[in-house]
Image (cartoon, rainbow, N blue to C red):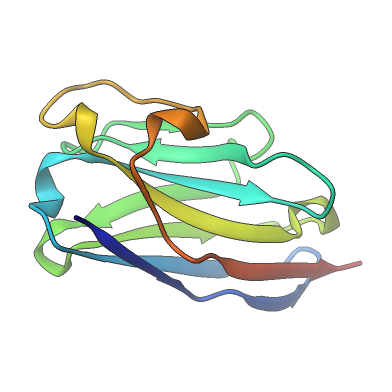
Length: 127
């Protein structure tokens, strides 16, 4: 069992920055991949970024160059630094854990591949 708690969302103007955090507990955090997804009103949940246990990363094209995913295993936390935010980045952001990826270089981008999810944190970008 893994518990995930996101924080750091809020309201920001276009061009601004936010840093989301996701605190994990319950399993050996350092062994598995973590992902960030988002869901805007009326849309499907979509992949944003993912990071392997060893720090290899992958990003959706829509956020590449603006968002950075990182992890601090000593604090069982994964981060999403979001810069140059746009109104279209407005969504509920979720972190997720992929336990099947333990100690591999596999990075998955679909929701079905992730085993545990946080409750989400709202990010609103005003124009």
